[in-house]
Image (cartoon, rainbow, N blue to C red; front, side, top):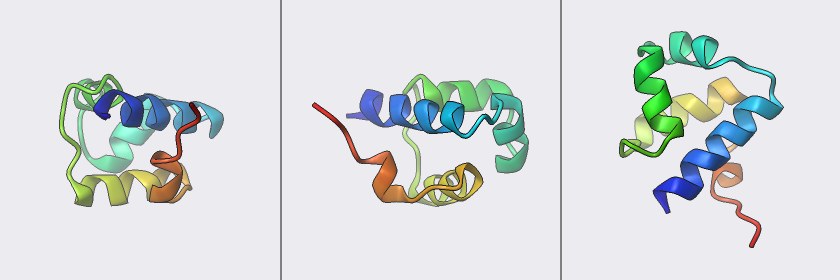
Length: 68
């Protein structure tokens, strides 16, 4: 599940034409730490997810919307 969420986050970021660097700065974390989020190597706390979706200009429901 973590891999699906991280892939969706990356997809939304790329669709929004935002760089990893921009998102990391807005989240007040390093680019390396943001890369870990997109690679599914960390558990994303709800508070960080709230901040991330705001930066990406989307809703949490979009992050959890998967096509099978």
